[in-house]
Length: 211
Image 1: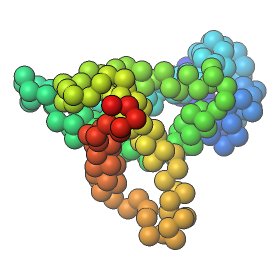
Image 2 (image 1 turned 120 degrees about the horizontal axis):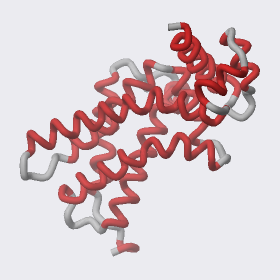
Image 3 (image 1 turned 180 degrees about the vertical axis):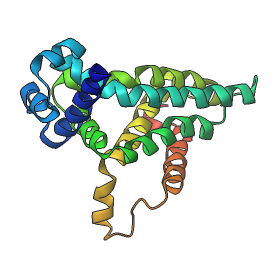
Image 4 (image 1 turned 180 degrees about the horizontal axis):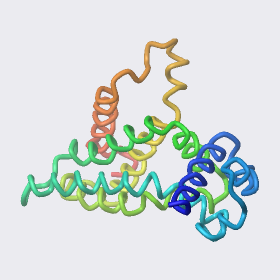
């Protein structure tokens, strides 16, 4: 039990300190001191600082992706042999992530830091967690949008994921810029807005420049 407690305490502390001070800027020594542990415990549980970073990300994203896949499995079973409605694909992608990030503000801040970090290794630690989700969404959208060239579909999925990430990392910016008119008071309402926006983008006509 003590080892489990130490591991969870290290993960909680690392998530908070990485979010507050930055991943590269926060040392393992700072984390262990704050967590009431020692350097050996990080090596024991995570092998290295990068192992700790990966564990912090995986702890939140792996259950999130599992929920996404569960929803998609359910929707596919209901759809049978017909293409899955785009709205449902987007709901499975977007809704669980919005809920998870708003429930974990430290992780939300950490995600924003890692996504925008110029360090490619740090960026990929986070971005790689979306690789399998990206491929699953691609495979489901191809039959739903049969006339869309694959390269264009990939761009549009990329834009969709960008809109989702921007929403949960920068939603407070819009609240400030709108003078409080636009703020998250109802998660379902915001998810509905984002799905509506992304679905329109996925279905848009090809611009003349790429026809």
